[in-house]
Length: 228
Image (cartoon, rainbow, N blue to C red; front, side, top):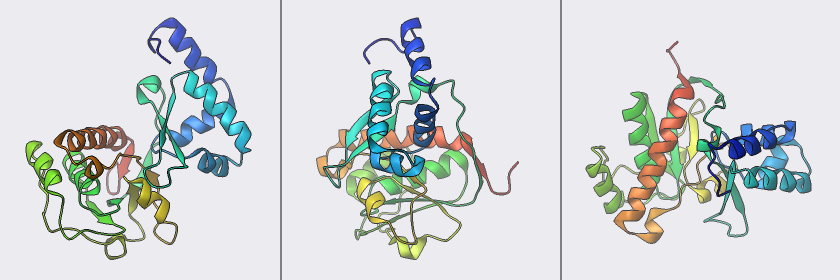
């Protein structure tokens, strides 16, 4: 939707789109993470054709955007547009101890996300990969340096060596989200484009900004263990 979301017409369209229990359930499901239409259908026990209808209404209202998976190119992920839902209360996550961010090579996105989480919350955070590289990508180190984040150039690890049963696992990569179907299953999925594929400073800055925005949105909703 190209109209100003804050205009009367834009706000009326958003309220109308949310005036259906199924669409509100879809918005709730997308509040903290991205999902494919099939995953939404499974989570909400809703026919896929009905999901498609409701997603179109939400998309037309400017509440949801779509992006193609970088893993399985046939798959589409739905992403909530938070600026359209500034007034919607975000579900709280209680009893969170350590947060573990996972991507494929543990060389960029997951490393940056863990460092951002530590700085934002002063809580425990770690990162891991499904196919970890030997080193952190040089451009990830560079963008971390520009934003005063501390990354260990050789500190990559496999998910099986890092994740514990009580961790909050967040996949920041489409491939990791799709591959982790066993005991280690991400609770949240952030569909952050892979900057390594583009391999420019601009791509790494965009990934950093995306992750920083998501961390800032999640942190206030998270009740860390031992806090009130």
